[in-house]
Amino acid sequence: MTPIGFTRHDHSDCVETSLAAAEAHCAARDLQLTSARRQVLEILLREHRALGAYDIVERMRADGHSPQPPTIYRALEFLGAQGFAHRIERRNAFVACICPGQPHDPMFLICRACDAVAEAQANPAAVDPIARDAGFEIERSSIELEGLCPACRETAA
Ligand SMILES: [Zn+2]
Ligand SMILES: [Zn+2]
Ligand SMILES: [Zn+2]
Image (cartoon, rainbow, N blue to C red):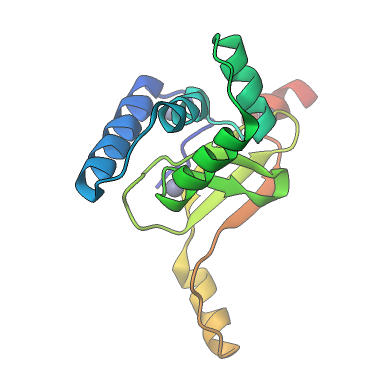
């Protein structure tokens, strides 16, 4: 799978697919996609970029809402727990998942200059033997790679 996020693509497809998946997921489990949860997801879905809780609050204010930070934190927690968003530890920030509802071990390519994030699938064949040799059982994994995205590399060159 090619990482999705840096290259030009039909982004309206990403938004529609993810919102539809989130709605179906919540309906099937009797969970509420409250307006705060939905607004936060929509903001994360606007760009493939890592956003911190305060970036999200600012964008919601720009949209004319008056969000309370604790509501945003709880919404992010919900979106993360349900697999609609991933936490980017290196940035203390979040990105919308590109394949919500599908079990996967994400690998993130994070641009240090513009915070663009592309999500790809980690390759278990590379990691599993290392864990096995160490007698370690992997329960979850999230790999973060930091560097420069194609656009920023071009600007830097
Ligand atoms: Zn997209
Ligand atoms: Zn994902
Ligand atoms: Zn960049």
